[in-house]
Amino acid sequence: MTSSTEASGRRPRTDKQRNRMHLLQVAEQHFTEHGVTSSLEAIAKRAGVGAGTFYRHFPSREALLAALLQARAEQLVARREAIRQQESDTTTALTLWLDALSEWATAFDGLPEPLRAAVTEDTSPLALTCQGYITTTDEFLHAARRDGGARPEVRGRDLFLGVLAMSWVRGAAMADEASPQALSALMRTGWAAPAASAETASNP
Image (tube, rainbow, N blue to C red; front, side):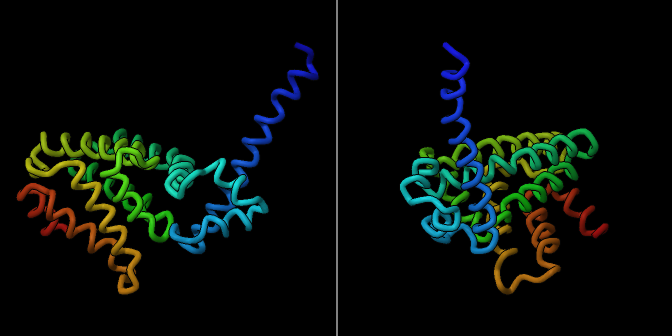
């Protein structure tokens, strides 16, 4: 194969990747401004491509969201590793991880709902993303439970859904600057073992 043939073979793949990245950048900005329920056709128009081109890259809203969240995964993974390395108290580590998840789930207005739906829909492109973070939550939870900091009946899946619910409430019109911390404390009373809950109450 000649060098010109190799170059022509690489160019379509390079162009496709460049186009995909452009669509993701435009979608990121659009969802930041208008939320995840906004029109996909509007994103395509803003990106300067036809709807057909857009859907060839992202056949559904969930596929687009999965790609956008994958681009943000490095930040959340970095938070996870920092918590593991720097926090020896397993109950505090679980709290920090849930806070990190909550921030991730509020990346765009309306994001908690498609994430919630994906937890029970194995075919959703978001399902694998959610399951991965449920598994990580279970790991932090099991460590806290082993050290007596978490209730035995609580599951990582329940905590993940709780984070999504809390993230949705944080974005509600009635929420204020105090809401995130208050909601986090309220959620902790649900999963923390009695001794850990008492310690939190005495040291707000």
